[in-house]
Length: 382
Ligand SMILES: O=C(O)[C@H](O)[C@@H](O)[C@@H](O)C(=O)NO
Ligand SMILES: [Mg+2]
Image 1: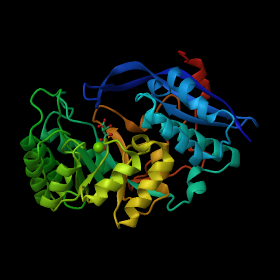
Image 2: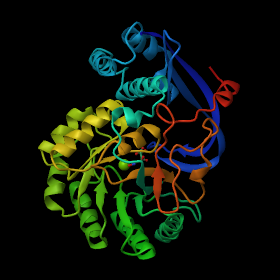
Image 3: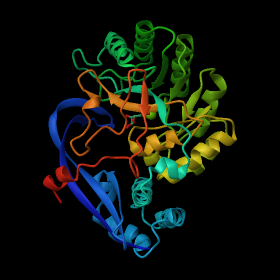
Image 4: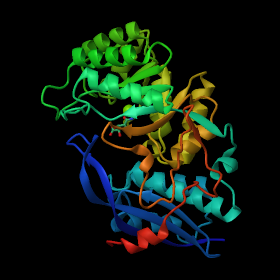
C-alpha cells in the first residue's frame, strides 16, 4: 500500500468568533472565514482527513515538502514519515512548521482508522471512554454583559456550573483591552468566580502571557488563597528559567509549556529544569497525535500529569488514551456564544458533554469526526 495523493480543499463557513491582535478569540457578528480540509489518498482508495488553517497547508508547503516525503510511502509508516518531515523542517527556512506536521500526522491516523474501521483511540490504546471537561472561558473583553467585569465572569461561571462543568478556566483580560494587563483585576475576576461557584468546582487561570516574574508571583500567591488548581502561561514561555524560578517560589502548580516550541524535546527540558509542576501538550502545538502521546508518556515517567491544550477530536483522542490527564479543555466559551451549536462542516459535535460534565469520546472510525462533505463541496473557495 502507498500514498498516491495529498490534496487540500479550502471552503468558507460562518462563525461568530473573531481574533484580536494577540490571536485570542472574542464574539462578534456572523462572518465567513476560510478553513481547509487536507486529504491523504492511498492506492487502494483509502482516505484520511484533517481540518487545518489554510495557510498551514498552503500549496508551497504541500508541494515543496509534504508531497516530497509522502508520495509513494506506506501510509501506515506514520513514525517514519513524521521523523522525515521533522528533519525537513531545519532546511525549510521556517516554512514547514509543527502545525503542518500535526495536520499530516492526524490525517495519517485518520486514514488508518477509516481503513481498519476503528476509532484512533482504539489503535493507540484506550484508557477511558469519557473525560471530565473544564469550561475554558474566552479572554476578557469590554463588551457590556460580556466578560468586561469580575461580576460578568462570576455570572457566566454560575451558568457553566448549571450546564454541568466541574472545572472552569479563566482567560483574563489582555491587550488590546485598553487597561489590561492588571494583576489586581485578574484576582478580582478569580475571586468573583470562586464566590459564585463555591469551593468544590476546580478553577484554573490562563493569564496575560507576558507578566514579569514579580507580577506572576503576585498573581500566583493570590490564586493560592482562592484554591486554584494551576496557573498557566503568566510569563513568556521562551524563558523556561523564569518558570523554574516561579515554580520554586509558588505552592500553586505551574502548568506549561503551551506555546513554547520544541515539541516533546522542549517539554523534556521543562521537566528536567523543574520549570513546571504539570506538563502541557497539544496536538497542534507539538506536531501531531504521535508526539503528543510522547509528551504524555514523558510526563507519566516523572509521575506528572500532562494537561492537553485545546478542544477538537485529536486532542480528545490524547485524553482518551492517557491516564495522566484530568481534563479535556472545552471551549472557548463566552456568554454571547452557544458552543453546543457546533460547526456547519460537521454533522455533530466531536465533544458532546453530558449534564455531569463528561465529554463522551466518539467510536466513529478514524479521528471520529462526522464530516459534512456536501457542505464543504458546496462552499469551496479554492
Ligand atoms: O491563542 C491562545 O492563546 C489559545 O488559543 C488560548 O486562547 C486558549 O486556547 C488557551 O490558551 N488554552 O489553554
Ligand atoms: Mg493556555
